[in-house]
Length: 310
Image: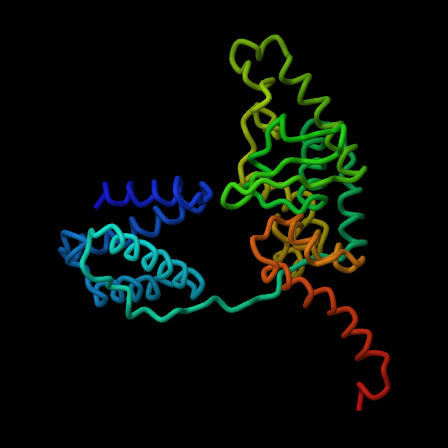
């Protein structure tokens, strides 16, 4: 089974072009399933039945997995066994009986434009971590980046002449996203520290790659590439600490991406342009933001229109 898993992941990476983090999720989900199959003495994939897979999903539910996680596991199994069938590695697909379940559509969470601007402007320290955190948050919000996209930025990806950033999104789709003057100012201040850090004589022997065009743009104070966990910590430290508890718990790095899209829509940006800026494969995904954008209009209508109260 292990070799089959590696072959499947190679297919997802090189044929379908899935992102690294998606591949990690597929591996984890399938390894959990393989462990379960081994525990009930199922030795080959040809022996797997729909009953075995339902038992596996039932066990995950009993362990407290959320419905969204169960749907993801089921979708992973469907994709895997469909590939096995296409490759003639099995004669029957045990997931054929699975329902075509869909996740419930939840409106993306966002944060008020004025409040977010004040929270970003409050980060005004001159320490390296202050400069980096301000640049990170300005770019997450100012370009609507996914966490993995920001962590994957290199020195070559930031163009200060045209004020845009080159992004490789899901499926390795490339896009160029402009950034405004607040983000430019924050990025240049951080870059000044970063270049000084990279050029320090004591670092040249240990990490000369920090100056290479393909070196990570965002670094920890120790010169390590920024990871997704760091972004969550930055949001907790810089944004959530200044919000009421009930609201703070809902703010994540991805909320800044939602805010980017919602605020663009509020100011009249065409939906198709927002789709391209976000890197969505389909405008259907982008249309979710139209529901948020009209919420303030609904609130005004209910509060001010006489017949809305009757």
